[in-house]
Image (tube, rainbow, N blue to C red):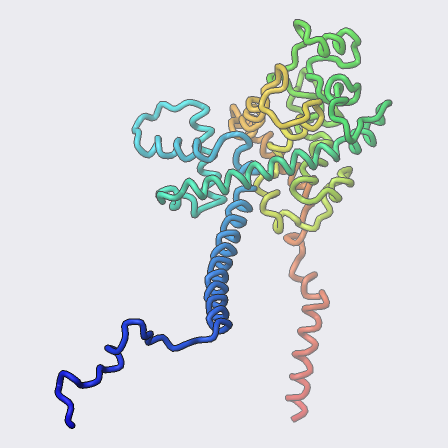
Length: 374
């Protein structure tokens, strides 16, 4: 008997709502695919993290130059704000501090030429934080390095009894005879027991501030009160500290003569940019003191103003003679730390006899002889 249309069998998709169209897949295969997808996502995240870490390391390394060659205390934000202020204002009436900040910004832009463009970026705060972290890290490294090296240098040079302790910084400063002598203002006589006691007691007339040049800045640690510029910034300790920070600690062992003539200055840009060692003088004062952690004020002594006094000596010379003396001092530092090169003194006649040029002529003569024989 024929079936009616109503009695036709249902299609496979209509037979039962419980019937699934899923093709059964082994559990292990599904898990392997999930693992593969997660591994791919993890790899993308790791690559992104590595790129970000390289970026952070780059900006931090760039920031290390700031405290060493741009400014020891001023923040990058303050330098940028002063440049912005000058861009907006037409007022030519500026203070010395504002001039100092602007000069710092110009110097910073010379070191990091990309920064001027980045400050217009909305995310420039991220760059500044990385630069600041690198800058402060460099300052911490330098102070820690000198803190451990200074005792060896002072003990070898002055042979104090008892010697300066390498580990305990509390025993330095004016409580230690050798350190006190080096920290003593040049206008006072440390060998005078009354002066020594007055400084330690911070008595009237013996208060040590940043307005006095410490003895450790002077050649042979002695100042001429009638000519205070003579020998200033030429001490053995200063040269040792500069070399330890900007070249290598081992190079600080030999500072009696001029540099070794290896022309290191061409290969060490950090040292070349701060060949006067302005920041080193501040770090050295800290290393000789009994202060155990970096701070801007030590008793009556303001490190920030001390740093500015040193910068002003070099960058705000009051006249042509003073500027000439600064230039001569910078030349002395360049020669003392890096040595001198006499390449410019070699004549063409001498160069022609050197083996490289002689060999070149000999090889050319071989070809000439072969050509003539043919």
